[in-house]
Image (cartoon, rainbow, N blue to C red; front, side, top):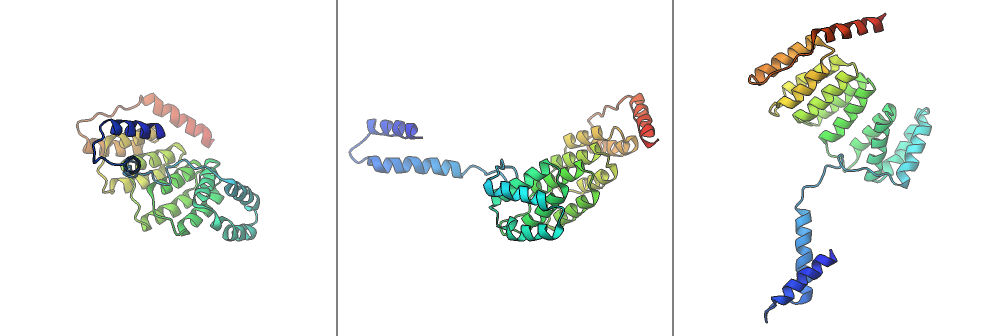
Amino acid sequence: MWRLASNFLGKASLSRKPHSLTQKHQILVFFRCIYNHSASRPSLSIWRRKKEMGKEGLMAAKELKRLQSNPVRLDRFIKSNVSRLLKSDLLAVLAEFQRQDQVFLCMKLYDVVRKEIWYRPDMFFFRDMLMMLARNKKVDEANQVWRDLRREEVLFDQHTFGDIIRAFLDNGLPSKAMDIYEEMRQSPDPPISLPFRVILKGLIPFPELREEVKDDFLELFPDMIVYDPAEDLFEDQEREKDREDD
């Protein structure tokens, strides 16, 4: 930064005229330009930024895990300590619990975050919760989160819809996945082909559902082609399901 400033001043001094700016004023102009340039850049959503946990967050996370078997003490600790965490620490603890698939604690912190004064409904916040719940096959909790995001009028884009639906499909929850697919079809966001292809690939173990989505895809994108898997692949998957049922 200082090297840039010195270069800037050097060039300015070569072309200095009798009524040119003073050196101090030139420095102020230079840094004002740098500030305006950086301020004009769009900032990432707080849910997409790298979340680093501070000392207070580490202590809170450790205590939350220790107290999760004692609901009374856990709620008391959340009210007295967790609610006082810095925003960065609170989000970092939530992200870490999501990574660890700590469903119970994630739902607790999910409620805490939504009560914070700085909270604003955000697509990525709900996406991360739903992806974690899909991994852990928690349909009831996913339904609760979905009701909340609809109440808060959060809209997913088509790519996010595709990722969430695929997560539920990959974890053996086709019914919930298709519920979300219906929401995707009713979304005001214009449909694009890639999320449909992601969903179609996830639907390979579910041929009947795949045919329904395939029909929608071909209706929306008549000039595109869908490559179907070999029929024996479906037969092999049906045999595997029968073995699991036995």
